[in-house]
Length: 111
Length: 114
Image 1 (tube, each protein chain N blue to C red):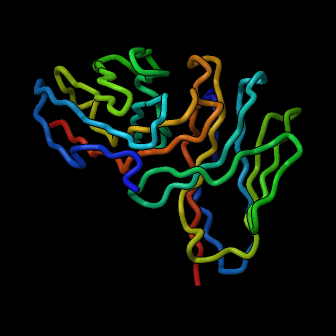
Image 2: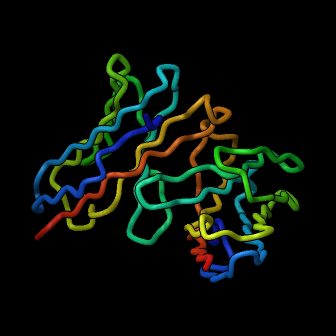
Image 3: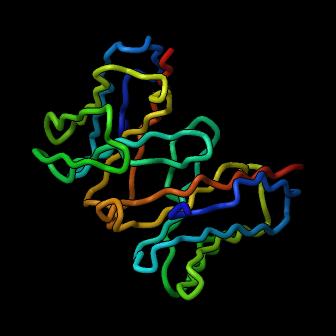
């Protein structure tokens, strides 16, 4: 089982739609969680950290469910510019407490 | 605002050839990393350097060596390239050792080994 698993998608949604992605992680002792965004053939960039209490940044909301070991990303009012791959990132004690990246979920927002 | 700069951006090698990927950051970060990204696999950590003068293995270090030349520069060397090393390589840096800080990535180096 991969340490961090994501549905690769693609998720095809119309502009203005609300879309949600989940990411599951296997290490119950993981402490730090992030969502990164990666545009096609570009480098990943931090979208937001995920806090235990959940957090919101404009149209983006991140949630952490420790009991079920998953994090989620909700995007409201999708824009064409939201089209990208969203990477779930978790710290992993199996890799010297380094960050472990999921394979990413691809989102395509259509006009 | 260069951030993290990697060279070369593209490279084609034959099996058995050697090469070095260069990385430099201008943000005065302490920690630097090399990742590889393969389709469906996510980014995997090859080596990292928590601070100047130290390097440690990541998840997939076999076939690679690194040098932290100074605080700014962290190079990745393939001594004898293999087709399995065909990938996109990303250098990254952070102020502190991950997972405490945001990772800043270079634009990537696309390597093909024939």
